[in-house]
Length: 245
Ligand SMILES: Nc1ncnc2c1ncn2[C@@H]1O[C@H](COP(=O)(O)OP(=O)(O)OP(=O)(O)O)[C@@H](O)[C@H]1O
Image (cartoon, rainbow, N blue to C red; front, top):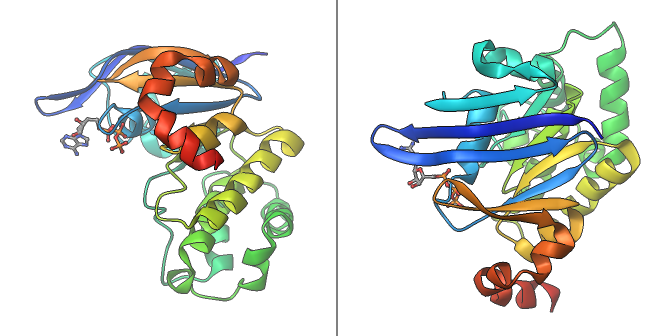
């Protein structure tokens, strides 16, 4: 498996707040990797520095063999970096189809390619097909989250980063959304980096994971290793039990 994303010695922060403190992690092509950790550990900040929303203070981000230091944020989607940020950020005044069309914008595909991709995504997310002309602002939370994921996929990313997509969703909707992610990974070979508070669910889907604390990696391993790790169990056991109940 070839290395798709690599962060080495990454430090970043907000004014005087140090959010990432020498972070090292990687995602290989075709992997499903999860980032776990308590509130404020630096998970969202990690994604923001990768997508270019926040400039790191030091360290290096390499994507598909390319140092991202000199690649501005707005060009990173075109390189194959898809980011579904916390809070979805779809365009509420536009329809489902218009949101999808805007998602295809960063990559200049051949004529017809965006339409083909859109139709494929509407097949994967039939609920969006049923609501194709509905305004995005009137979708339910679960539908809006699916639209945010589908919109990011319109650009044909090599890596899809998702920041707590389960936030605010009812358990059944979380299961449905994660079912789609699993399928996109298993059947379409999509590489995924997922930030998730629901550790048990995330570790059932992922190949590998990292636990962050205070901007550093404190545990890393395969999903099975993380599930068996006493530190992960101590931090997440209640949640793991709850989720598997
Ligand atoms: N815009 C900001 N201004 C100042 N400090 C910030 C800002 N965003 C995040 N921080 C701080 O940076 C640290 C890391 O935050 P981050 O959002 O990356 O954590 P997280 O692991 O994603 O947390 P959560 O699980 O609560 O979303 C925290 O201490 C947070 O308070």
